[in-house]
Amino acid sequence: MALADRLLSAWYRGHPGLALLRPLEALYRRVVERKRAAFLAGEGEIYRSPVPIIVVGNITVGGTGKTPMILWLIDHCRARGLRVGVVSRGYGAKPPSWPWRVTAEQPASEAGDEPSLIVRRTGVPLVIDPDRPGAVRALLAQETLDVILCDDGLQHYRLARDLELVLIDAARGLGNRRCLPAGPLREPVERLASVDALLYNGAVADEPDGYAFTLTPTELVRVANGERRPLSHFPAGQALHAVAGIGNPQRFFATLEALNWRPIPHAFADHAQYSAEQLRFSPSLPLLMTEKDAVKCRDFAADDWWYLAVDVKPSPAFVDWFDEQLARLLPDR
Image (cartoon, rainbow, N blue to C red; front, side, top):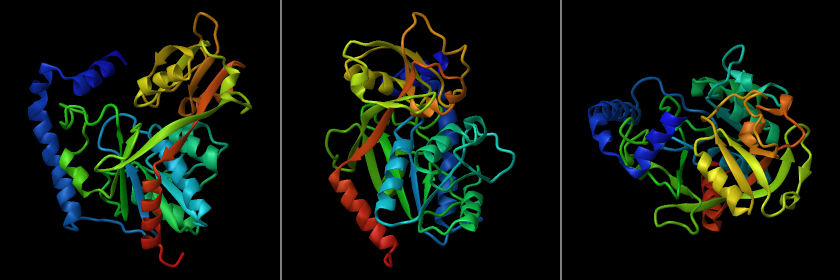
């Protein structure tokens, strides 16, 4: 984590040493720009699904709130009577075969932490496969659906898409606006001009070029048995160990401080796998983690381990815009 933290700090705060990486950045840019150009030209094998595909992704390395947004989109589509499914790469997953249908009973080590979280929270039909077209085909072979959400996959150009939603951390922005490895961008910043909507996580109001959304803490959930308690279960000033193995751990720690608790931060790498020994901290205090971390700890969680449940609250303007897009993509629904 120390090296990753230093690199993230350099990308977002600046460091003269990054200039040495610009030749590699130029090479990386050429590769991704060629992939994009080939997609736009219709070259190579590009799969177009018979139902609309909505990609939820980003162009930056690190967390931007994709999984909570996916959860909101699932609920929103279902509330409008739509049958929705999800496909995901399944980062870190080790299933017996690909593609793989994720169920709530499977361990997160087999299905991946984010797919496990999504299925356990919503029960949505979800298939993982690094080959996104393969995942879509497998999902449609098993389910009759109206729309499919693609968790990440913005740069997976073998899958045609009908709508691209790109999430940006409002506080960190695009860093130094350079591509990997000299900066945090997976694609050049000019790529944002071609997406359908930008969504800014943590923005207080809609931006001129996009929509605001926030992550709102809702309750505490005991990791071992799913018992739910209100946020008031921990009084103001409560000291606790805070665990975050997500793309932007500092955002989680800041959220706990905003709730007037006193977190002792323990940042882990994104998608980290845990053991009980790793999470045995001193002094003895309640341990609070993200929901993404909790799906990997349920089998060995202590009684005083909790996760913070959060929900997405998008701006009304985005909700209206998204409903217009659903009407356009599904005129008969």
